[in-house]
Length: 359
Image (tube, rainbow, N blue to C red; front, side):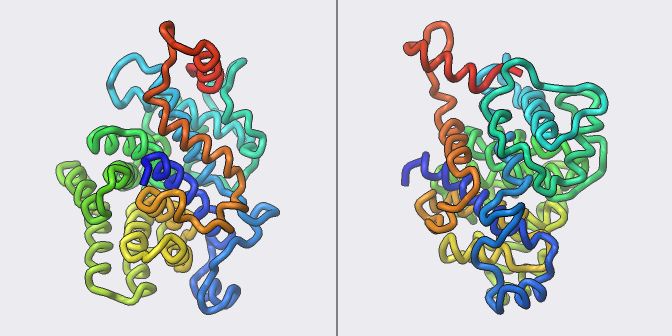
């Protein structure tokens, strides 16, 4: 499988999962089965006026990817934490697309705000998370970690681009933690982001999911307050090996509202999935926050199986499919772009800098 297919599969399958799960985010499993049949939901239903519409999960994932690309082009050192500034700027742009702004005057818009902000369909409120909005509104400095104590899943659901972008597990873990910490201040909230990013990095290199989980656990092992995240991942592995009924296993892992629960449910579903379709369906149909768990499961399955594994009917009707695919391609190629004073192609150089300006 080509590496580019893994990048595209990761972002597109994550978005497909988000679009499938968003309409039933707050529904119990019993209500899901009553509404859609005993097998639960297995196809798009209307959300935000159409089938296949993405939610804030995918919106913020795209802005995460944009932040990393801008950072790779413009950062002045090799310190991973430098990307926190670019992430903060990107998330402030996302906040503006939601009709809100920072209370302290932080803004990253200028005459060249970049291509992603100019995608008009992203200027739509798709049930944006209160914790994310509040953290971004109240931030007093670009790049600072959120001052709240939230361990909600919102930070960890948007870090897949960090795993795709990073070249080592150490870089991936730091990036995932930094991105999640922008809005979720409890260690469980941002350590889950680090663990998710590590798994994506290891998987894109062609490793098996159990090996990716082991890498994440090793990164967590010496970090303060890692116990919740570690225990959740270990439980996902244990339940997979024990062959417990799927519904019972997911119920034991939680409801997904908290970051470590969402991470564990997504990981468990990816472990037991025979293919993309069934893995996505498993990650949707449970009590709790379906769009987050299935978006994370989709990202894991997408990087494992590639874009080709995504059922064509889902991919065809996915909102902003071309935008998501283009972002995945840019994330894949950005480290190799020939730009700057010695660039071979002046046209490419001009196009890239206009697409990803400095702020």
